[in-house]
Amino acid sequence: MIDSKILAMNRMLEAKEKRYYKIKDLTESYKAPVLSFMLNIPGEDKNFEEAVSFHKKYVDKIKNLLEENKIKILFEDYQNLVTGMEYLAVLNGDGCVIKKLMMEVEEESMGGRLLDLDIYDKDFSQISRSSLGLPERKCIICGDTARTCIKEERHNLKELEERVREIIKETME
Image (cartoon, rainbow, N blue to C red):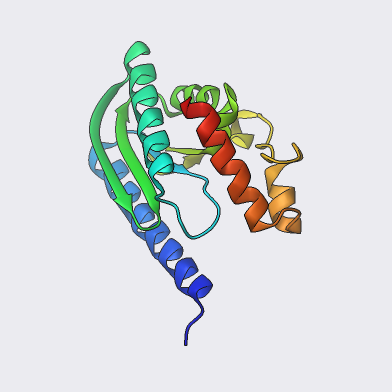
C-alpha cells in the first residue's frame, strides 16, 4: 500500500507542474506578467472552509490593489483544487512593480505571511524577492528565515497547522 504522504506529495508535484505549464502558456500567449497566488498551508488538508474564505478575501484585496494602481487584469482563472486554491491572472503592467505591490500585501499583516504570491515576467522569468534586493520571508512561528526552519525541520506539522489556523482566524475576524 502506498503511503498517504507519498500520494499527497505526488498530487502537489503534479499540480505544480500543471501550474508551471499553464503560466508558461499564458506568458507566451499574452506577452505579459502572470500572477500566481496560492496559500502556504502545511499538511494534507488545504481546502478547509476558513482557508477557502481566506484565499477569496485576498483575491479580492489583490484585485482592488491592482485596480487602484491602474493595472488591468487581461485574464484570470480561479480553481479550488485538492492541492489548494489557485488563482492565476495575466496583468497589463511592469512585473517588478507588480511584485513590489504583492510583497506589500505579504508584509502588511500576519495573514500575508501565508500568501504565496509569485510573479512571472512576460519572458516567463520569475521575479524573486532576492532579485529586488529584499530579504527572505520569515517563519510564522519563530521569526527566523522560513527557508532555514523548513530545511532544518524546526517545527512539527501539528504546530505549523495550529499556527496557520490561528492566523487565518485572526485575519478573518
